[in-house]
Amino acid sequence: MNYCPNCAAPMRQELPPGDNRLRHVCASCGYIHYDNPRLVVGSLPIWQDRVLLCRRAIEPAYGKWTLPAGFMENDESTAQAALRETTEEACAHIALEGPYTLISIPQINQVHLIYRARLLDVDFSPGEETLETRLFTEPEIPWDDIAFRSVALTLQHYFADRAGNQYSLHESSLSVGDRDSRKPR
Image 1 (cartoon, one colour):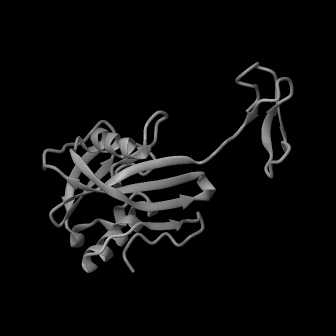
Image 2 (spheres, rainbow, N blue to C red):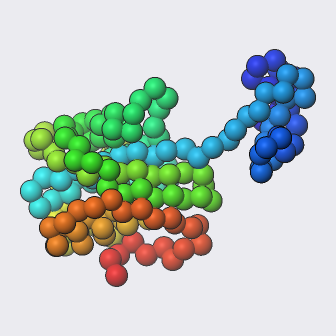
């Protein structure tokens, strides 16, 4: 950040009093810019024994499969973001059943929150950022073509929980250097 959004004066990096990280601070008015992680929010839509996945029409991971999810907007709750992203990417109608996975990815400054959801009908179709939407049974999941490790981890948790018929919130952290296995272990 080069210039202050309040007064347009030059910004400099310094350690503000009481802080423990370098921040961009305005040399003129003292405004402090905080660059915090972004929330990626979405859903894990289920119909009977199948999961709804979207094939991406945008980068990163063009052509790969993912859950309907995206960056949360200002002035919306996480639940509203999950519903909006599912509508935008899969034109699907869902009922949220609660937060399911909370995955921190510190190296890219993101936190991924996926809600478990029930599809209300099978009237879904690709949205603007989606090439294809499809329901998959567990054996049909295209593990080698899953776009993101957070999605693969969410699917792994879901199928393990479904086998035991007990669902809980799964919290974890992924590192950029982690083994990039998308297939269940």
